[in-house]
Image 1 (tube, rainbow, N blue to C red):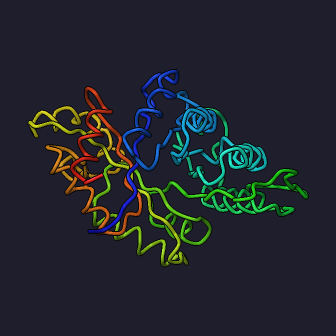
Image 2 (image 1 turned 120 degrees about the vertical axis):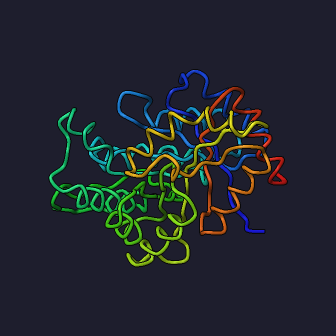
Amino acid sequence: MTTVRIGVMYDRDWAPEGLPGFAREVEALGVDDLWVVEDLGWNGGVTAAAVALGATERLRVGIGITPAPLRSPALLAMELATLARVFPGRLVAGIGHGVREWMASVGVAPRSPLALLEETIGSVRALLRGERVELEGQEVRLDGVQLVHPPVEPPPVVAGVVRARSLELSGRVADGTVIAEGHGPRDVETARELTGKGGAGPGHTLTVLAFCCVDDDPGRAAETLRLQVEGQGAWLGRPAEQVFTISGRAGEAADRVHELAAAGADTVVLRMAGPEPVRQLGRVLEALGR
């Protein structure tokens, strides 16, 4: 059986004060990862990661994702280094393009999203390694910036991307790739191919986010996810029936996790929907033999 890390997302619509308790509950269940979100107007990803790390003892926490246009690479590296120093080996830092309309709404839409992402990821990784960074790029300028307290163990910096050119870029410059909800096994295989085309080595990780609802009535589970699936389908440009979910009975959900793992996913992050998300998560973990 293919081994895969199992993560769970703290949904952006859940109030931030619920995060510490949720983090402790899912850690007790034995989940590997907790992923937090940074979408414009919702919660801050770095602060949410700090809250989750501080509330737990072993859980790995992923930031999925910080939008590059909103973040100075120098400041982002400083924030990530602080977390990585205090919680070594427990952070994954996701960086992405951000939703272009949202970035435009706050006046930070870049001229070249690809250049900005490449320059941001490259400079953040270098700063986290303790290097002095000189960069006069298309979108990023750093004039001899260096961290005073770089992490002893730099956290992996992963790219949250969707389109082909961005996936190739991720393979070239990032430690791993995060792909959004709705992508199924064939998409995972394609992502592996494209990151490999960009130059990804065997250590390049692939994290897949997935909508999840566990219910003994599969029809009810599908209805619970319907609005999310329709919205994501519109964003991805595909019909709702082609939006991949991990849903239905617990055993069926576990089978879907294994499908993603067999296609090349290293980590599957469940975005729970419906009542009692922790109980649902526990049922999936039990079906997976965790």
